[in-house]
Amino acid sequence: MRLELRQRLGNANILGAEPYGLRFNFNQPPTAGAGRYDRLGALEEYNNASGALAWNPEIAAKCTVQNRMRRCVMKDTIADPAKPQNSVVYYLHPTDSTKRADGTAAKLDGTDGQVMVEIPRFFQRAVYSDSSPDTMEWWISPSPKAGYTVHPAFFKIIEGEKTEVPFRYMSAYEGVLQLGDNYLDYYDYEGDPNTVHQRLAENERQLRYQTNPKLASVKGKLPVAQGTRAEFREAARNRDGNTDDSTWRLTDWSLWSAIQLLFLIEYGTFNSQGALAGDNAGGLSNLASGSWAASVSGGSSTYVPIVPTGGTESLGNGSGNVSLKDIYGEGAGLPIFDGANDLYWDDVIPCYRGIESPYGHIWQWLDGIVLDFDTVNRLDAYVSPGAFLDDNPSDAYRKFIAHSEADNVPGSGSFARIHEVAGLDGFYPRASGGSTITGITDYYYNTSGAGKRVVAVGGISVLGGYAGVFCVLAHSSSGTRTTAFGGRLCL
Image (cartoon, rainbow, N blue to C red):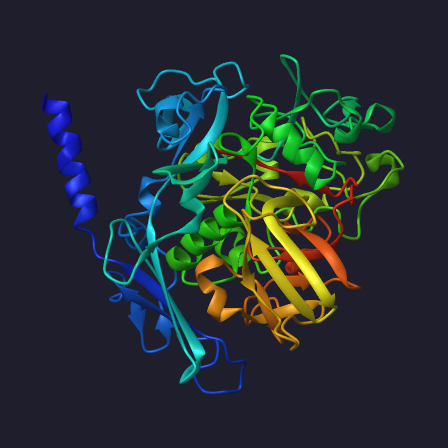
């Protein structure tokens, strides 16, 4: 009885929380006010004469939505798709993910279930006006407010009906291959971890060749790669055999846009590399840049999964990074070490609120979005809450970007503006002109020809400053599969 009262009081406190947000000036220097960020609402005090103050723990403590994100372990069988929280096995300790919330040991290897990050439903508002075309505001609230709508990430198709859900779940780790009861590395590796510890290319486990594969989120395995978006979609659905994405699914555009929005408002910047890794080209996005030995990559493509999942457990539900050297020493345990080059030991594994490696290791397919290029510079984009497919949008999809016979996407490059009128549906590039430290700070890879395209995000280990949470790749067809592409599980 006392516990129930405490829960009700906690919810009342959440319901009383004030909205908060961020304003951004899309202009590029030397225009006055160009690139300026301003914190808004409940975070308004964290500004100075130059705009938004840099992230600090005090700001983080006032982000009521983000503070409810937490790592957990989920059952494979989701009893009620409309109430996925009922299938949480246990929550992890807020500052040490090797433990359960009660302090006892957790199992992150799949024994107890999939390691996920719970994201609570929130409400959003985007402010953009033709009379002030150079600025935009994004607001979020943990409770209903006039002028706010539920973020589209919190709608799914369940039994043929569009249904609102109270929580979404993002994989804590990049997607791992499961066959039967076994969780497998993408390839085998051998050698003394203190001298030579490298991959065996002949044992590479490409997703496309597996029978009944399952996409997983567990610690200690190299992420799986080499599958089309549809193949990754099927592997995610195989967790419980659903056919409509009502439970386990490949990470979708709407959920990713929710994570982007939460990051943007909390950190007051688009620069996820600077914010999470401490460097404008930081994270794992320099790992294979310029120093990658063929002997390490097995004579195959350098764009392979390099770092096993896990390593950020000491961050718990928090954000930041952990250096490879702190985890592995100089070569110990890391399956790509060749004993000859230690440049990559300065690299770090980034993490946002329990979501490990959100960018910069291998590309991550996003589902629930279909791109239709009329020309290389004219795009129609469609998004769906479920029943995902490739190429030809079904009735479940709605158009959220239309070219209206006018150019509406930039060529490849660092981008500076998004489709503001589609701002409630995410951050799709509209204009170039940015850099790794100005504008949106991430790179957009545009199509090289007209036709249907699929979407990948985050970047890979050779992109340096071009990677990031807002990095978008739009030139791949639905049949694309390479060692540079993986996918993440979500619910």
